[in-house]
Image (tube, rainbow over all chains, first blue to last red; front, side):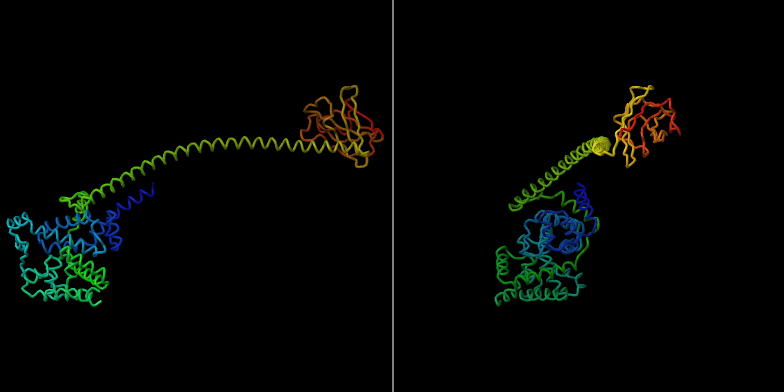
Length: 195
Length: 282
């Protein structure tokens, strides 16, 4: 009985520390619905996910709500994650990005945006779901990360904001081949930089 | 190999990782990844690179947000706003999993309490039994001491009786019967005397003398050539451990006599206090 009590207490106390787990343990914990998993995921990835969300939705409050939505969805659809098809972060990032894009396209957000007249609000997706984009605001704060600005721009559009290659080519007024090359080169650069 | 390499060059993997592909295209990429290890490796490398990139671009949310979000995650657990057919299944499974966990814990708790109660009861009953056992051990120890005393008494008297029976076979041992004098005609006793070994023994079991009091003791005398020789004092109170009572040694006794003297004995016998006497038969 004492042992059970200790386990319970240690579980209760654990979240006060920053938790970090190897990916396979994290996946296992998440799928067995161990609350430790969500604590660890938050500690490890909330910053990166917040970064992605903020690129699409700049309003802090809305972005924080979206981060919350993201974690709720991660927790509730953990069953649907298949480690064979990709890494956990890729899956989580897709959830965050899709929620943010959905928000961006939603009527209430557009109306709120108009009412509040927020300065750096982004443009919106039209009824045909074609993406329009304000290229001027892109990639400015990413210049510091050492990648060439043109690489940053395409990476942001495709990877963080969910543009297809075709959409990015149209938006940037570049040939599709150039977009593909830039993305590949940008990723090569990143691999060189991080490995 | 060539085909895998060429596939990588198309740039579709970047789109796959970015989650931009249609379901059909996704299945195609996954099939290729299963077929060509280099495709699978490439996908993972892209993922890791972009993951690290995303990490480097992290914006830390405010510190208080974690508690709020985790609380919301727990309250919104299993509840979905727009359940799709896949997840509705999941929801049910998870709920039953959660319920069964609670049930298991509840059963475990009840079992723990039951075990505790049983343990306490067992402890008390064991304690009582231990007390009983201790008392029993004390009683048994007393019995044991009694039996040991009895056994040693029996052993002693048995060895004395064997000695007496051996005496009758040994011609050197004289059995001298002392008869009552006019002081008490009923009195009598037996003295064993070893002629060559000079030993003198009184037979406790054959002694019939009136009980002496605290101030007086009987004294045994030997008559040697008409002179009384002191052989020691004794009480009528039977010695519980011995049948035979050893007295002082003597040679050349013609007769034995017993007088009642003051406690500790006298130097010479008080003749009017002689209670038994008997001569040694040759």
